[in-house]
Length: 341
Image 1: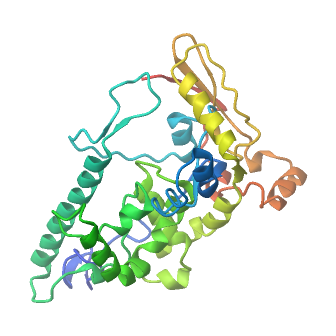
Image 2: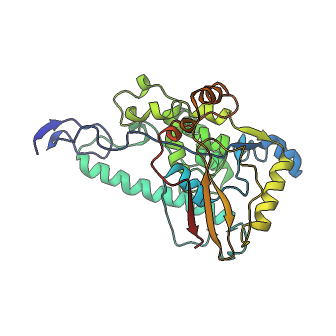
Image 3: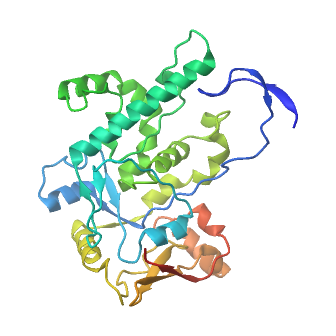
């Protein structure tokens, strides 16, 4: 392998020195984000749930929430996107002791504390490593980052990230630090919250959604020279695809949630949700047999249509905009069976 002198391009990398030349065009060159084809407006949901105005839109910083009918589950989502990631911490802040229930048990205050303390400790370790590698007097700080993307349980929590430990629940300190960091938040983090604001908490893929949001809201020229400029084109239509989703009423959303609660654990079950409302190329659940084995099928892809029909689908961009990733899908069978774990 040849050696070449390269300059330091990002915090944490080695200072300018002779290092092995990095192979060209190796790494992440594209990203795809999948979200359900329908959403509920959070302001309307506030009124429907009988809570105070602003509880979701201001308190959570969320405008819309995407959701799945009984036609989609974790397996179909992974089949559609093909990307997964996991993280675990030994704390009973968010867990699922009752597998019959559709929902986990959440200790809200402890969950927030776990999130903020984990971030504090990760940043402290990272900062120390950067200082050790730089070996110079210049102090490393948040200004050295091009962007700051976080795991995003809800938008407002991300905005509270910059705050000293032991003051997590001090409202006066919170307001002071949010005000002091407002300019930094606008410049480096706000763009990352597009999907969180429009779709809600995606749990594991949340941080990847924030990365995708940054890329989607910046032009190739704005990201030129950064590690992100290679994958900009794969997400350039993300905002348009979010806007192409179907809006449903809070009542319909509530009916879907009730249906999932009542049926998610059933055997010998055929889902009732409409397949026609899914995006082209989406995998969906067709049935659960008496042994809890799940079977899936895939909606027709835009490339599967005759040319005339393909043009009609493309022209209906305001209804369902097709993800660029769905036109280049791997060769997989039209249906699969997944045992329930």
